[in-house]
Image (tube, rainbow, N blue to C red; front, side, top):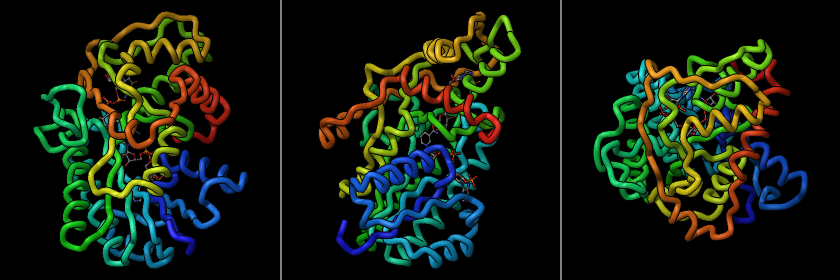
Length: 325
Ligand code: NAP
Ligand code: GFB
């Protein structure tokens, strides 16, 4: 980025990933490291403007006049929330993405980095999945609304580049977890749901704890504070419209039952884990390759999964009164 001060607007800045980027940027600013001396970071949530609404989106852009945008805002949720709300996931995310990218184009934003997800890849595929496969076949039926809306970001990025020369790109994270996650059990992903429910089980002295589904599906997880580092690195260094997968290594893929055992250890829960197989498992796996990331950012070190889970459990226990529940 140039020496002229950049204004970086983070949509979805109040969420899991947005708050992790804020922690990183605040640390860099305090330590006087990194590039933040030439950057003015603005973190926005839905209270600052409903991005489903074109006029509110334009007003937000006119207020802050960003030169760069990290676009995180989205209707987001775990497997069961997606299964029950595919239409809303599609319509809300299509509206948000259309408004944010068009406002960015009209106001000459130099770079936009938007967020896709490894769950949007074809369900029937070969593994590992890579960046060339986004549009190769239908996504898993559980989250087709979210997936097709996310895929359209890639189409918009290519269109704005081809027709108007814009540098709008996207990253593709695997499942994310960490401080400031969404612990609302109607909407949440597996890790915040298990952290919250097991915290209740510990405090109630419950002899058994129920994990939904068989526990057999496989997932790659990235700690939100690691993803924040990679997101900011992409904003500052990555010059391509082509998406880039930001995922943990393939060998660090874990079963849901291993996730539950790790959370059990972090909570010090002593009861038995049981499985409710009447609940859906969702996609069996979506193993993604981070080869492109590893070739461009050779020495990046991911936080070990157990450490990141322990930090996330500790954060929830310290913050359960103000956490999103
Ligand atoms: P999150 O914690 O649920 O945060 C969502 C953010 O979007 C919040 O800041 C929310 O604002 C904002 N938002 C939602 N609807 C909005 C609207 N209509 N107008 C303005 N802002 C709105 O989600 P997250 O996990 O941080 O997700 C961030 C990005 O990562 C998303 O694009 C998501 O698709 C992607 N992603 C997430 C995961 C994951 O496992 N969590 C995995 C892969 C990709 P309020 O706080 O004001 O509601
Ligand atoms: O995190 P999760 O909701 O999302 O669920 P996905 C992963 C797995 O955890 C599934 C199991 O196999 C669930 O059956 N699971 C066990 C639980 N207990 C629970 C629980 O208490 N709550 C939840 N939520 N799951 C989402 C997509 O898929 O991944 C989204 O639907 C999104 O679109 C996200 O992009 C990253 O990994 O299955």
